[in-house]
Length: 47
Image 1 (cartoon, rainbow, N blue to C red):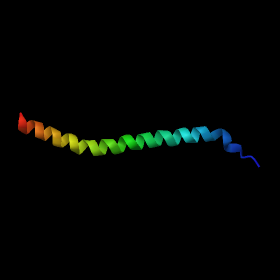
Image 2: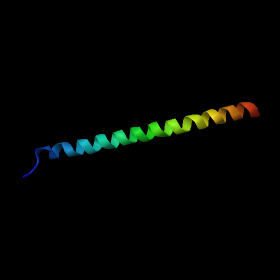
Image 3: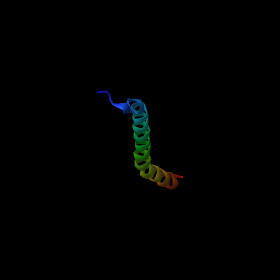
């Protein structure tokens, strides 16, 4: 028995890929923000 939703499979893979990319960008932003704040405060103290 062949499943009828085989045509929606590429779309599902594309959606998963897009969501994973968005998730990675979100995590990177969250991890970079405190680092940027620390760098900014250090720069203000140095100059």
